[in-house]
Image (tube, rainbow, N blue to C red; front, side, top):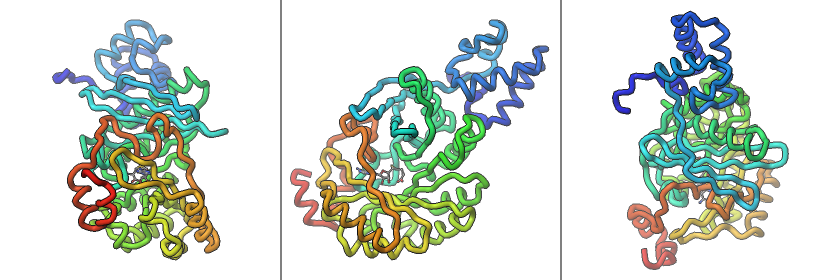
Amino acid sequence: MLDDQRLDLLELLPAQAEIELARHFAARGQPAYRVAQARAWLYQRDALHFRELTDLPAGERAALADRFTLTAPELARVARSSDGTVKHLWRMADGELLESVLIPARARMTLCMSSQAGCALACVFCATGWSGYRRQLTAAEIVAQFRGARRWARAHEGGEITNVVFMGMGEPLANRKAVMPALTLLNQGYGLGARRITVSTVGIVPGIRELAARPEQFRLAVSLHAPNHELRRRLVPVEKKHPLPELLEALRAFEAAGGRRITFEYVMIDGVNDSPELARELAALVAEFQAHVNLIPFNPIPGAPWQPTPPARLRAFAEVLQARGVAATVRSPRGRDIAAACGQLRAEHETRPPKPFVELMRAERPEVAALSGSV
Ligand code: SAH
């Protein structure tokens, strides 16, 4: 409805939503406790429609629907992996699709969420990067993945989401207008502790500084992937805009702001960024931080000329880091059978790398371009 004048309650911060609800019920001569009732439906039971608010009189449910809306994307598809990972495909009101992934692991259940439809940052090894940028998501659309996945988990697995990571599609710090309020919503509204929410960034410096300035202890993960400018700019084009020295300076500010440990993510690509020399360089680079390095075996994407680092070399890389006092772990790939693993999320399925990537690799890595054959 283009002329819909109704206010989306899920787009508002909890305090604002409460004010709107209080006004609404007061104007209708309703008791004050209606606000608490509605609030519980919004933030604890993840209502998708006002007709679900069954402890309110029917007239009040109708009146809410006349005045407010709730962003509630349609669940277009569910895929369950043999390892317990569950991928949800959500269809937004305008038809745009996005994905979130539920990852159960012992006492934890982590939701990996998307922050943008597509991504403009074009990391060469990332499927979302290959698909390109579609549009920004609203805060309500971001949070809708959490609400939808939580409802699904409660209904199907009986579990609760304990952690959220912004490691799905998109670059969260390139959509601060929506991600910053989404963080507040998840924390203050939906009751998820700030330390259980991780923002993963490719290294958008102003965004890291904005996050550092927030009082909450949100966690930060930085997609490093290379310990020097020359290699990193080939893998992660944003390195040209925010080169390593600038990134490290922002990370120092982040650590200084709250003593929060930073995670460095490092995708391990066979023969590209996985040599022992690079491990030593990486150890030296992150030594000044209370860092933790998460090594992620490259998840092959169709049409990409790379392979994951073999396990023995992966272990050797991790050992170089550990021997230098750097905490390092290898992330085990989850949901591979349903294309839900890191970097594989994309609603549309393209099979060939777009031209800019081919040109990039041809210009800078002739041996890799040769491997890719037809492209
Ligand atoms: N834009 C954010 C979130 C991206 S996805 C960021 O860059 O951090 C989360 C992680 O998955 C990032 O570290 C990303 O580099 C990594 N990733 C992307 N493609 C991958 C692939 N094909 N294999 C393994 N990890 C990948």
